[in-house]
Length: 336
Image (tube, rainbow, N blue to C red; front, side, top):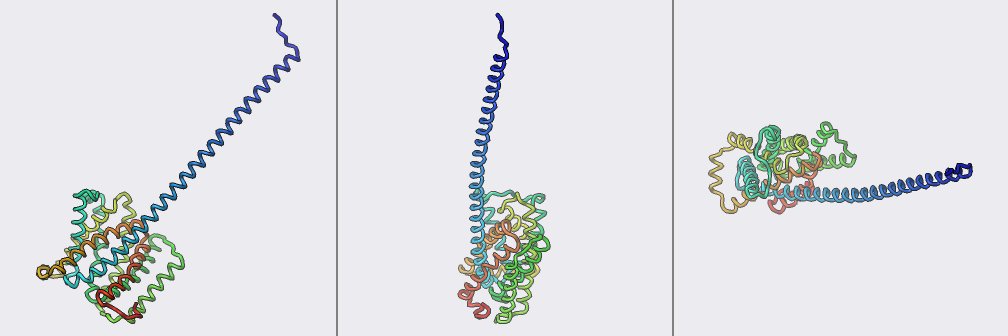
């Protein structure tokens, strides 16, 4: 058998191979394009899903912030008003704070026993060391606030918070490199101006009360800045645990301040004379102490120091209005 290797036949074979190669190349290109289109579709779907998840997370975060703000505002109003009433029944402000702090710990431990709350017990290495300073920063504003309320109205103490807002903003600028918009700066300055106007029109001026109120503002500013720095350094610690450490380590400092400053025997004697209404007010103040403690922990974790302080100020106009009607306190229209 003789193979036909003529030029014509050779060219035909060559063309056939070329066509086959071209078809193979086109098929490969088509498959590549299909795969590319499929990848683009998958990427588009993933982007849409990712964007949807991002929106859901952002919406959930915004809802959480709204809850924290409302909880902080309502707790702050209740705490301010009930404290003013409580010191009228028990005229030992530090001892009252001891009861409120102890009440917070009892509520926390009770919730843990009932398995409603979950947090680890005290560990010095985990949080005890860091919360030692937090405890001091936590206690000092409460002490000066209670002392101030013995001499001046709720409205006056509220106004001094404006001073602390300016101090916190200055501290956040230097220690946290926070930059503020001009409107924020103007609003803080307007708050300071309003505080000065109040000082000239208030009818409850008392030198010692104003001194305590000023120290309340300063310690509140230190509290906001220092506690935020500690909270940021403990991202894995739960809010219940932060609240627990804060109150547990703050309690001994309150006791150490109450013993030399206030007469424990006189305090106990006064507690024995309390009627049902007086005890009810004290118990409500302990519940309010728990609420403001938890709300404060949530707010400090979620917000900046200045935002936290401004949030505290937001509740004060309502506090002032309520104090007018409940206690018949400062009623000057200029002060309002």
